Length: 74
Image (cartoon, rainbow, N blue to C red; front, side, top):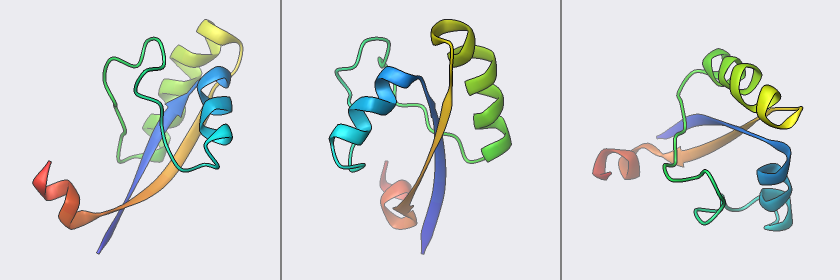
């Protein structure tokens, strides 16, 4: 079983994700003290709009899938 998660990011973090071949988030990115994905796309859009846009001029929502069994272990 797969769970879809969403993570709002700003343009600089999105660039780092792209440089990784769209394979990883960067835990050492400034302001990334916590990895905070959400399960609701509308909420991720709201966060991007209310936090990322004012902070950096634009916001994006990444979407990724993860094995549900893995989430149960975390």
